[in-house]
Length: 263
Image (cartoon, rainbow, N blue to C red; front, side, top):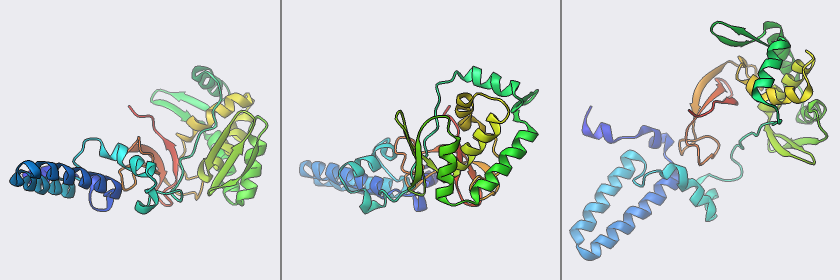
């Protein structure tokens, strides 16, 4: 490996290059070169040349740029100029419930939704079959039909409607947006788990962790894989404070089904 190869950061250059990161760093390099140039012209030229090379081969000079540059650009109203605008995919939220994780786990085990084996926890075969069948039925429906299914399935009063290629769920105590993928998976989870005698609020708390056991995409039925999603800034869906995210996503349509916790 050459010195040049060691300097390169392909995760932030080429097709992964982030225009806001590049512009912010170019401005910083130019300002530093100009300031030094007033004191000694050769110094300014050197800084400009080295800075330009660093931005070209590494994507940025200022440490942590991918975590703040897109947000900075958005704050000054220039997000649309660089493609970071309101048309980008939104990050799906979770149907939360105030249930102790240990209580939820023991309840799912007792109900036979999950089974514990020597090499870990697994989704029960019968529960998986019903879950996947329900998802298959839901994915065939329209957005309005899916919104009705969400509104019917959740164990609280709320209104659901299609919003931003997903489902908006609004009630007295919450307001969340679910991607179509997540809405299909979570509604299917509620039906499957509640049918096995689990308290509806416990079932609600289980919607997110159950997605970790998915083997097919709720949206298209494609195969899933564990991967790292990123946008041009190295992150997912303009989540500026999380440049890289390990996820369970569809190999065919790219839908994110589950986001793994950061270590």
